[in-house]
Image (cartoon, rainbow, N blue to C red; front, side, top):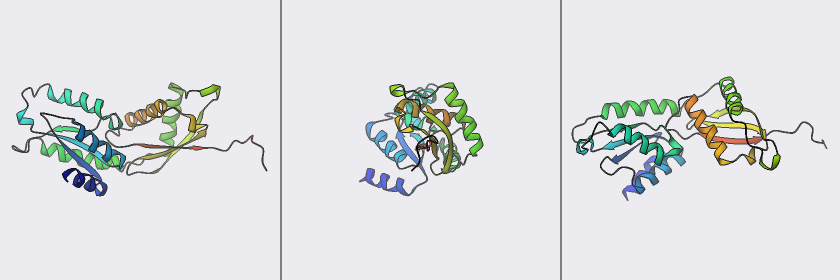
Length: 198
């Protein structure tokens, strides 16, 4: 019932704080809820509760960052804060992260900046040519935010491999500082100007 309540709440939320147990972080149930939150298109912040029970607090932040990026690659860079419900430690920073993530989730990027990024990203790593057929990505726009959603126009974009799409998402996330929010890419085929007309 508690999982069902959490999932129902995430459907109406804009930013979801997922509290994990710092003594046993990233259990299967936690990962499943985090994945559903991201598929629902919500911004995510991770809170590691029971920080006061962890012995080595000097290693904890680095280890948590590595584990979060490993277990939640679809939200790379998701903010993660060690908190203690008993002492109240870390709650101020956690709430500030919620405000910041809400701003990122609502972020609108100018089309000119997006197309400069696209040109650089596709020049650095050109799209593959499956079966010798060249894939060209010509331009992109952002039709909406909440979560940030982008449309890329080009030829044969349906043939782009998942690995290349992940490269684009991660590059977009890093360049425009959008950690922890789901980024949606949609592809549209542009008309071939040389195709025969009816």
